[in-house]
Length: 304
Image (cartoon, rainbow, N blue to C red):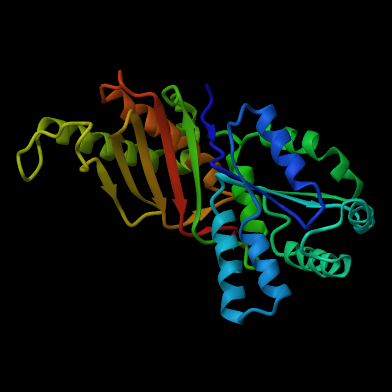
């Protein structure tokens, strides 16, 4: 089983009468209620804050929260933007309990204005015009095309490219599997990083081996499912690695202070998967049902 991104939250957005409720139930029924789906969230709050001329700080807060939400690549956003004529036709048939068609039109324009800022994000799907009539099919195809450890670098690159300065700061993602991550010895074929990867591997595995043996300043043997001491820290780009076993889950949390998403990240993420495999070999994982590699990038950038 290839480790892949776990979609934690799916949000469906769009103006009134765009078909959100229908899509909500179609996705639930087609995936046996596997997703945590939100019918509207930060984007709607932002749009309506602008619609009713809320304080600028409130508008900025919702825009910031939306960006923070999307900077977690475990989250997905679908926005339905049909032709406005379709909204008018549906309004003539169904009406609306709160808005008249003029108000719906103003909200529709505000959605379009805000979409300019994030429509190119890799975890955002905007379904426009007549494609809305096939929204369920398009959405399910998109949701089932989940990035894996071998392809996630494409989404990270696209997110950096979508930023005005080619830098996504605070980007995060989770790669997970119900089976142990497979080794990937081929990452050491790259001469430029072979020595660096080997050093990290030896130090991370060495730390865990020492802690399990009680070779630490306290002289205390660490229990693998209770310890918090499987930690590696350095000032380099891959700057912190913390492995922890809790609740039948083995998690490796990685912080990268800086990553060049074009030159280094495709290889780095494969190395981290390989490292996770080697760490797992040091532990008794009979009770483990889930493996998670959680990565936070403080600066995922493209160098000019």
